[in-house]
Image 1: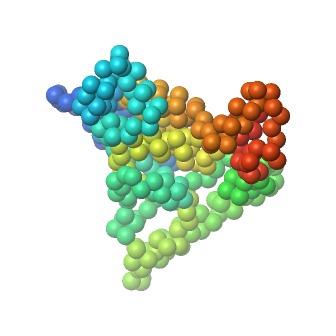
Image 2 (image 1 turned 60 degrees about the horizontal axis):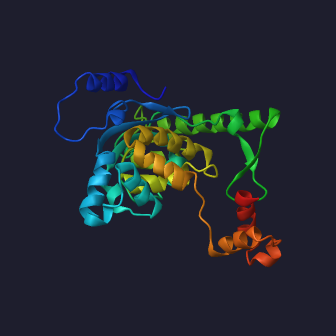
Image 3 (image 1 turned 90 degrees about the vertical axis):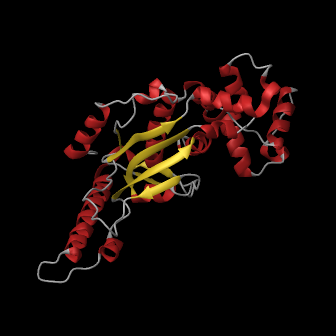
Length: 301
């Protein structure tokens, strides 16, 4: 269960007591406010607070550029122009604060995006719950033979069951020892900040993560990509659905130019030009190395 009954009661109470405001409100985001969206087996994402909407992006751009925006006839066109030309500051006018419950190994990958304000649940002060991420069988995969940080074929049958048994048994055993070290029954009990060192990386932690829309889009461009690790991608895809309701014009531009777009190198542009005039281009005469050529072919065939 991602939420305890107490947490759900707190959310229900917050949503039952709306307050009037003079600030800009995004109706799509209001529907998500405080709602817990389940992710993985015990994880969640919920919006705690937000600032701004599509109009805030447009307003900031017009303040910044003055007459330079007069050629753009509408807000959607302006937002698409800003996205297309990699402008950043107008998108920084929107901010959002998420409550995220996630496995520690996902958190360590996530925290590499050093563009947010983060406050994490303290295992020095509190005791972590007995909750671990155990992958569904369809997400158990062998190591990729072509990508050192990717997955290959899905494990099946007895091998999959063996791995699942190891994950569950090791998780439970380590938590039993964690509780045993903390216990003061007939002993002094180890400090929480030390006892936590024995916990596995698949135990769940929680944090508040606040960022602006420009940096959120950068996070989503990398983590909602099909090549991203499944576990963090599950969170990113949930966030994408939330952001699409919050700033629909900005998200549509992001989806078109970033998620659905392709960036070409100078060599890639030259290869396309040569192909358009009928020239046969191979990796050997393209000027690309094998990795670059494989990625180019993956897009352009």
